Image 1 (cartoon, rainbow, N blue to C red):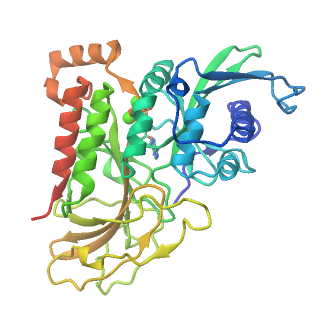
Image 2: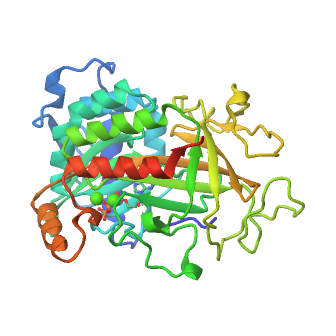
Image 3: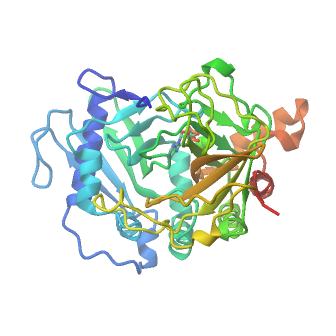
Length: 418
Ligand code: ATP
Ligand code: CA
Ligand code: CA
C-alpha cells in the first residue's frame, strides 16, 4: 500500500517545528526521574503541573545546542503521562527512538476538518496531532478520569494518549503549538484497504469522493458503510457502554469510532476473493475501484491480544488463538483457524460472509477525537443547522444525546449474530 503523508525534510515549512518537537520529547522522556509509580497523587493532575524548559540555540545546562531558533517547551502533567506510558507498556527508549530517531516524521494532509495537523512517526507507531487550546483544557480537566478509566478497563477502545506538550516559538514569529501524542490505531503490517470514521450522525456523513477516487487512504463515513459486522456476544457491547458513559460524564462529544479493514484476499481488479475460491490470490496492489456489496456481513471474534506487551521484539509475533471453538463461521464453510496477531491496540479477527461466501478480514478500531466539549461553537452549530435539518442528524448535539446515538449506531453496525 502507499505510505500516506509527506516526509518533513529540510526546507519543509514545518521542519523546524519537527526538530523542536523531537528535542523536546527527548528532553521530557530522557530526563532522569524517580521510578514511575501507577499510584498517583491528586496533585499530579493539577492543571498547574507543568514544566517549561528553555531551549537556547547554544544549549544550556539541561538542553543540548541545536540549529533552530530558541524555543520553549512545555510538558503538561509530566508525572501522569509518564505513568500512562508505563501503564501502556511503552518503553521510554523505544518511544524516543520512534519519535526522535533517525527517521523524519510525515505530515498527513489534514485529514480532519478542525484544522489540526497530523504527523506520523517513521515506524507508523505514533500519531501526533496539533491541538486547539480548548482541547488541551478539556484533556487536562478530564485527565484524572481518563487515567482511571484506562487503568480500570484494559480493553477500553478509547484512544491511548502518551504525551501532551507545547512548543513556544520565540523567534520572529511568536506562536504556540500544542501537541498530543497518541497511538496510531491503524498501524498494521497488513494494508488497511478501507477506513471508516463513524459518529452515528448522518448529516454530511458521506465521502465527497466518487467511487473511482476512493482508495485505501479515503476516510469513509457513516453513510458510506453499507454492511454490518456480526459478532458473538462478547465484552464489546459492555466496553462500548463503559467508554461512552465515561465520555458522557466528561461532557465531550464529536468523537468517532475509527475502523480499519484489511481484506485478506483481493484481486488486482479490486474484487474480493472468498477463501476457498479457485481464483489465486493476487497481491493487493493499490486498490482502485471496489464497492462494498450490501450483502456483506462479517463475523469476528476478539483476539485475546489486547493487553500484550508491545516491545518491538514480540509485537510481530504470531500465535495460534487459544479458543478455536469461539470462531464463528458461515454455513458450509470449513473452519479455518487463522492466526491471531499480537498488537498493542485492539485487533479483531474477522471472517466475512457474502451470499454464502466467506471473506477474511482483519479489523482494527478505536474511539478517537474525544477532546471536544459541547462548547459555544458546537451549540451554535447545532442551533443554525437545526433550522434547516433534522436536529438528530447533526453531528453537534449535547454529550448525552451524542453518546446515546453513537452507541445505538455502533450496536446496529456491530450487532449480535443470532
Ligand atoms: P474533526 O474535528 O473535523 O472531526 P479532527 O481534526 O479533530 O477532525 P480527528 O477526527 O482526530 O481530526 O482525525 C481525523 C482523521 O485522522 C480520522 O478520521 C482518522 O482517519 C485519522 N486519525 C485520527 N487519529 C488517529 C489515530 N489515533 N490512529 C489512526 N488514525 C487516526
Ligand atoms: Ca473527528
Ligand atoms: Ca475534532
